[in-house]
Length: 121
Image 1 (cartoon, rainbow, N blue to C red):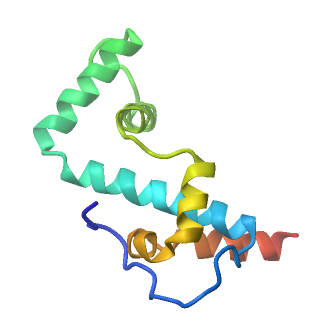
Image 2 (image 1 turned 180 degrees about the vertical axis):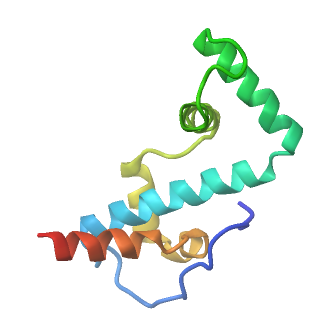
């Protein structure tokens, strides 16, 4: 994996399995978001338009019929389908054994999710 997005997390010494599942799940979503960002940012402009046209065709609509939000959502779904992201359980197990392999790829979004969850309850 080549890290192209995010500042990454500073290395920490921690005991395996010391983080609550809520934190691990938030980090998993952060990791998946970072991977999706990396893939999208690697696309050439022409390729984005090709994918958008393919998404429109798959949806059975004429070119330009979808609003930007719908088109972007469908494009993200297409990219996610093409991206080999691990299932949560497998990722969490590996993350807890080797957090130093994943922390550099985290965008930091997981912190916001945890903080907002703590204040909303």
